[in-house]
Image (cartoon, rainbow, N blue to C red; front, side, top):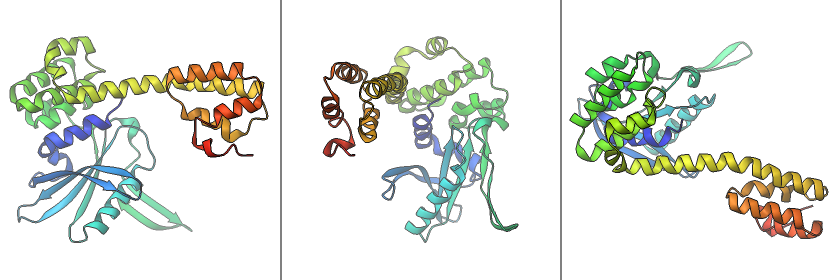
Length: 293
């Protein structure tokens, strides 16, 4: 399940609805920010700038976890450390929200050396499957409503109720995106065609998020197709020219376009000798400046 884009969009649209999950129900949202992490050339999404009842601001990072990753707690710790260095005057908080039981790697970082605990850091965590879906739909805000298919007791009628609630309550500019996000999480419960009929194709097509999700799906299909094709090209190179430098054979993994892989496979099948094959491989990857040894 590709969840990164929907959850980033949900945080941006309905951050105030998520505050009860974070233990921040009394705070107000001042901003939802995306920050550049120059050390890793990536972005830190889902940073909510909150204001408490006294008017003081603090930062709260949401780490949505939709896959099993033993490093997630350390990753959150690194984000908080970076934010603390960048904003030493602001309190910085973080919460991991696990989407499904198979993503859960715990709620503490513990390090033991010589039988002695040297680190014991408790990480605030939320396990969505432990929450009640009916309560989310009927008592929570729209942010929790679209997450309800991941919660305990989620049913097809509840999904239909959630759709009706979004249509009735969401501001028009948010409707299409919220319904698209709801559709992603409701997929195990409601057939895609039925969901489209309930929502309306025109409504979903108004969502920019739908375009992103379609691009993700196409990229996933391309990756699945590219793997076997890449392996086929590598097998031909190794079979015909076993002395080809490994660094050049690895360049094949840089090609993911199916048409280009097909052309490369034909080129490797018809290359007259190893020198010709190496010349082609040298043009397709990071080794293009050197054939290596």
